Image: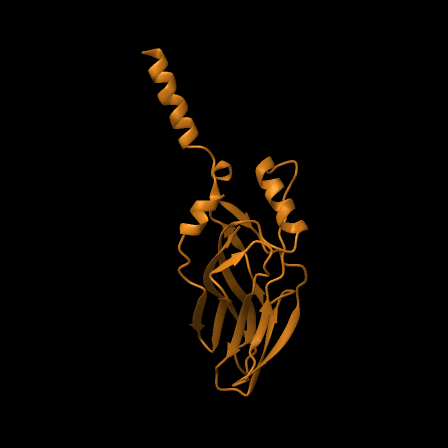
Length: 190
């Protein structure tokens, strides 16, 4: 009886292992990509987040970008933002890892023109960080691999893009603050 209980216990432990220990190959092939483009309208602004593909192969460039368009009544408007008006924090769903998108500078401005053929666009550039002393070793190894190579490790990625900025709301110069969000996902397979 003890041997049977031990076998069941070991089977449960093996089946419930951490997501970073499982074989991701078949799982990634079968996973669905539900949204490669998202658009949110808030006030006088349109925020778009786009992954040009739903599935990339390891070694392939990830084409991910965000766009901010002004659709208000003025000919142009100046927005105030950090180092980028568009941020790309993401999560690797298979392992459950967060990949932050830190802010470096503050106090930058950009002028958006109404009806511009080319809206303000930011292409994704890799970023993120970890604490070798505080984060789990498997996360540290993943992030080192992620940051030290040009491509992405295999996985399911969900990007919670956000554009954060303020703009002058009129003659009284009150600042309106915006945090407009959009979400896309893609996968990287072997």
